[in-house]
Length: 174
Length: 313
Image 1 (cartoon, rainbow over the protein chains, first blue to last red):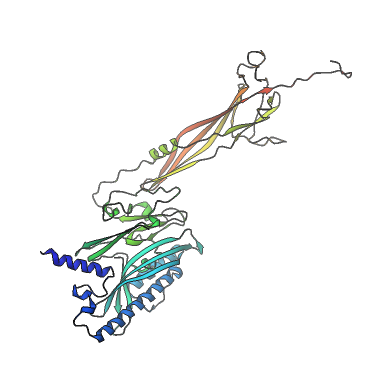
Image 2 (spheres, rainbow over the protein chains, first blue to last red):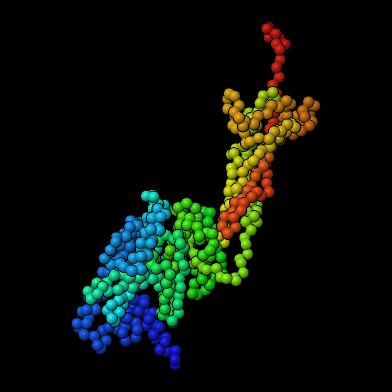
């Protein structure tokens, strides 16, 4: 009997991470936004706008990441990347630069699997998947065969003040 | 691509991922900004997939585990997922693990993959060495090399001669001998649990026996050409004839003359050595081997007769 709530919560959490839900996964009822009794039309509009802002930030961040794979240069103030994600991106670029390696993205299929907006509307979690085919170059010459990658990650985004604008703050693998 | 998704429910558990190699190169748009160490709690989705990079590499890399049997190297169902590599192994610490142009990069699930320009590379699950863990039995590269050397196919080649065996050699004139094809220098490699062993063989000397009791030690010889004999040419001048039927009938032929001619033999001495890299670095010589080739070479003679100006004898 005691295991039932825990199992239910775990399944709900799993589904939310897998992108089946579009809301938070703190309780079972919150995974169904349309049935939320306290959600007003105005709130839905706000939530939709924020989710759109989240997706835009993810897209901008991803574009920057792909660009820096080739340039190994990260702008001083990127529009949608900050915090640990930005620090790691700089570190990664420096590491590649140190070994003289640049990475060209030959093709990719980037997918946002799920967006979970925190009830406070101050942060969001996004699950993404990126199937890529990349080719490394060393000192301007292509090294050899291309690499196939199938990456998934959770992005933690933070909202910037009260504006409908987010930045990708941290990227984790699970 | 075969893909198997396993949903695991790990309530309130922390799942540390493999620590990235200090010199690991990030080649993916996501890994480009992914935190090197992370943890998650609650539900998780573990995806194990058969990526091309996971497959065994061609050529000299036969992709055995750096170490095996670790739970970290297994999928959720117990099936081996990726071979494991210790974070303190020399290969993992090497920014160019498989030679120039190779490097480590992060792949899905925190795995570390080796990019090797000439092959598909390989992916590993990085494991931390445990204190007090009994050391892995060391690989004996010399034993591996000896096993490889015993399977090496060493070919002496075929003996070619000028004048040819069909035209018969001629006493008093130099016959040229050479091996065709010239003995190659074969090489065999094997990778086992991160230990890379390469065995090389080279023809160090060739002992020629011409069948009339004469012999010399030299190289593989060079094909006949007009003019001065080049260095490395293997030549021999027979003094006594040895044609089919001579044996037992002509008292002037040598006892070594066979029923169809002299037996010419080339005995190729092979020097074999090995080098080992990986957890155990070493190298050295292995027992030499010898292979031989032989032909039957008939040698005739040309007799000169003095004749008078009128044509009488």
